Image 1 (tube, rainbow, N blue to C red):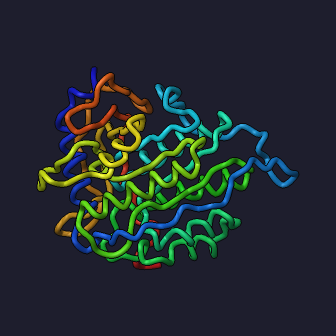
Image 2 (image 1 turned 60 degrees about the vertical axis):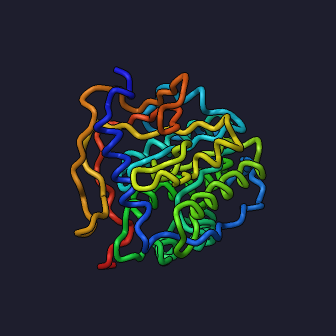
Length: 306
């Protein structure tokens, strides 16, 4: 059955993402992190095991057409699930196994960039994890899925790939402080495009709330809103923007009464661990969808009790 025949899932994911991505307390300013200038190379020295196949998890049906040098793939999610981070990690891993240099962009604020780079270069000890999670992003009172244990786990997978000598980079593309939607999304688009321009032969993969990677103007609450994906698509019409599909379950969502696991309905039919790319974009500007299976809520990586 076509993914376009599940309007309830589409509506649920969009409204959920809007509640997570644009609360006034979390609107950042338009200062984005600078591009990491460090070149990546495959180091197959005696301390690495880069000749050994990576464990990429379940194979992703339909991923091959998007896994190529110079490609830009925008994954749009419902924040706060384990499965989306696992899926995106598997897609990145597949690119690494093909011998590609891969740059993974996460919807983390610019202020977190140095901590991420330090962690990637670390041994992944408890003290290293504590340093990564010491930033304000991971300490917020209302922690949505952008600071989940699944996101921290994705960064850890990237650290392991780099330690194994694979050419993986992680960059942050969100911005700091408070700002209006259009300025925030324009700054995020600028950051992502700068990364692709600085590394034109890399496979660039981004993960954001699925309202951000729409490529057409307008959101449920503001017809003048210009999502990040629209600015990216104007400069890179070859970019692929994908929306999430799932088979129901739960996600860690922040609502007016607080944050926690929230049950969500899903599609009764459809594939799992697959990418479907359409001949033409839909009314929201998505070029296709990516399917995970049943979703499960990913709690904050650092709780207030720690």
